[in-house]
Length: 179
Image (tube, rainbow, N blue to C red; front, side):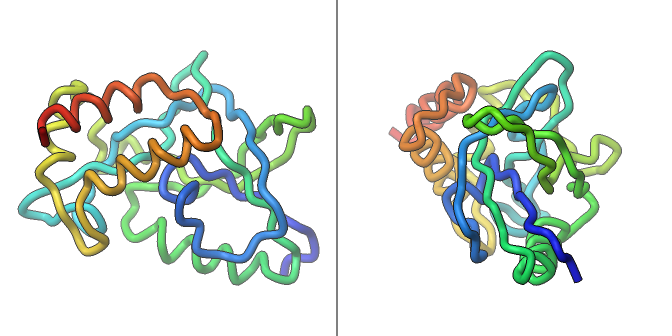
């Protein structure tokens, strides 16, 4: 049983749909990782026959990822981590990690997050933005259309005033395809 509060770093679907109880949230920056549609989705936003793409943190030296940190009270931390592991570690495409994140308030906290396993067969880190848009536009999985995932993340980051130019470009290209 955890006897300390924990932080969870959200950069994708956790931003718009955390699914767990938290005390508060704050924007923060994670250095040397980028938000990337670099995992083939064969469950939630695609199928084995028609794969979609989902976000992960990809380790890229010199990059940064702005995201939302959720503070979870110690009494809920075990159940929250259990929930997140069931949700995020559906395959070995993600790895759970504890990273240092700088909060907008200036302090640095250790936070749980989920990063891509580049050695996994679901790693899709070499796709062009055009390929990503085409895949996202046509995929659907058990949690719905892949475009819904992209648009919800983009909207929520905008609402939080988090700038992600690559995500904005991908959203624009995907919207162009759908008309």
